[in-house]
Image (cartoon, rainbow, N blue to C red):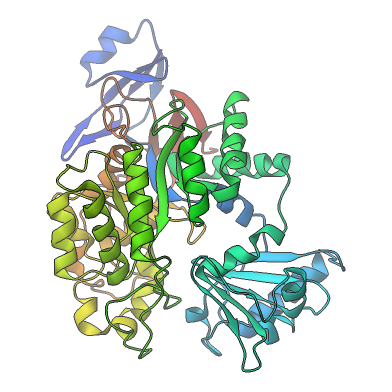
Length: 535
């Protein structure tokens, strides 16, 4: 038993306590000095010295295994030009002494950050890196892949290659692949991409859990189990749990890009919520469209800066409806990626068709929900669909919003404050490795509506900002709600899991600009210290 004293324990809006008692992985009492007299003779005393304590942070949508693998790769997210991308990759090949037989795969380029030419890299660009080593580079949002000529050869792409799951194998005027793949076309080459061994995956998962704990993350809804990799990737987490190596609680979102895998998954008898407090089966995860940065998000009207382009619908509406109905009929929660207003509308149509007059008891939700008209917002509010949002995406999107969308569409988009004030259940996530899973930058973005460099000074549509209480709740209690755990997780209350984070500052009173600089002093999961800052 442990007695935490002299703390600033966040319990609810404007409600704080000083003392907490933890035993057997649970919080058993929260109060003030009266608890000290009751428990001081039978508990280990930990003096928090006035530090602010919040519930453990819970990222409600990311790709944790992909993030762990990504952190082992050549880092290119900060590349600011095509030339720098080429030079950094060439240097990496030289430093690692890669030779024929190797394969350079990495993720994170973003042409919107390029200062020389803002376009998608193709084979002619990546051939400048190497003509003998296959090079595959995925865009930061994971919806576009660029290949050099050697990779096109190794990955077996030809002029006859066509995607069966949406997207495009882009061809040049002669009909040959340019090295650019969009959306579902990437699935054509996934079986041929290099892959870490199971032991290497477990190694990087453990390493990345330590990083997550150091940033205050204690739970995650991870989206790694996909199509033909469902059982293999679920087994990774199961083995780590059996080894006692999990320091993060995982809710597994089951990802179906290829519709051929969803019925066999259901036939195997998986059930929503099956598993343990550290590793549970979660919702079916589907896609409706692409992304704003790649201009593949499905739009009701063409992009303002790309006339005629209305993005990509990843599958016909009838197929989306069928997959949602199949999941709902088997008692599964569903989360669907939707960024463009057409993409969001398609999700709402599928959900409405599957539920009919039924309440949203399975907590169906929309991931991203960025581009929205008032009619779409009203439908979400009316049907009480969950929303999973990434305020940190504003860091990349603010510079392109007006040019991509025009003033009218931009004025009703990224309406996170409106949704929250209307009572919509809205949880925070990072979608890592699309961006870092650093929660403090995400919280800063939600409260400030600014990029990480502090621009624009007044914030982008500041009326859509959240206050810090709402933002913290979105990262804790609301993420717990999204996994049906709001009665055991996401609050510092008796009976809840002893998952909490001790901070170096009071984020409820500090200047907004300071939030993103927050450091974690200690992270506790299941009553055990999993991270403690040195000194």
